[in-house]
Amino acid sequence: MQVALFIPCYIDQLYPQVGIATLQLLEQYGCEVVYPPQQTCCGQPMANTGCVDDAKPVAEHFLRTFADYPYIVCPSGSCTAMIRQHYEGILPPSPRLQAVTTKTYELCEFLVDVLEVDGVAGRFPYRVGLHNSCHGLRELRLGSCTERVMPAFNKARQLLETLQDITFVELDRQDECCGFGGTFAVGEVDVSVTMGKDRLADHQRHGAEIVTATDMSCLMHLYGIISRQRLPLKVMHVAEILAGHQVPA
Image 1 (cartoon, rainbow, N blue to C red):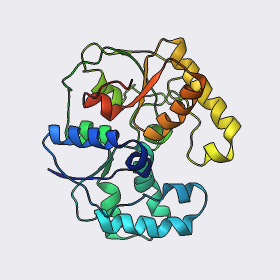
Image 2 (image 1 turned 90 degrees about the vertical axis):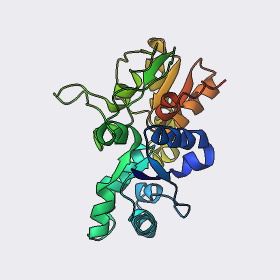
Image 3 (image 1 turned 120 degrees about the vertical axis):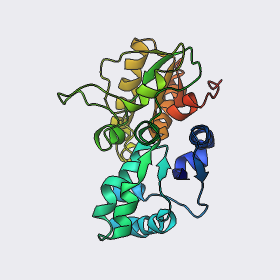
Image 4 (image 1 turned 90 degrees about the horizontal axis):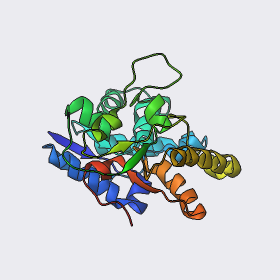
């Protein structure tokens, strides 16, 4: 199975180990992974700030870059949601647009729904708090939301809980936002930081050692607060844990 790997800008520039972990996981399960070198951004930063005209050529470039691949996999719920849910509001309808939005998957979603991975080998002897990122939760439905009456499920947790010796901490507010919100964290700094502090306090109350998520952007925001407050917490992307990477020092 051939898979085109789309790596978000902030992972490419700041957290390359997450891209490497994603590659390792996909290859572990038999995928032929291709990295189109001409890829850039999905256009989400521009769209989030209302600059739709600026996002349009970026989205068009994404379509040209990835249209010919059977699957597109991204280790980010927010970037995947941008492509799947919001390109149709930026670009005119076309068969290519329909094809690309249909075959673009977030990493955990792809492992569970397409590759049907039912267990991951490895050991992770830590107390883990799982942060459910908003885009993945409410736009991609990677997990169930507490405000909806429905059977509970979570695709990231489904994979993580097959690791030996992992312990999940059960949060008071399991799907609360971290406060990052992309450019929201720049325009509404005080609100964003307060939300992040509240999110981390929930993890600390329940004894988490590691905070994980499907979006490194959320973890980047939370780690900024952790480092400034010198909190005894570490952050790891779900892909890093599943690929067996070491806990950061």
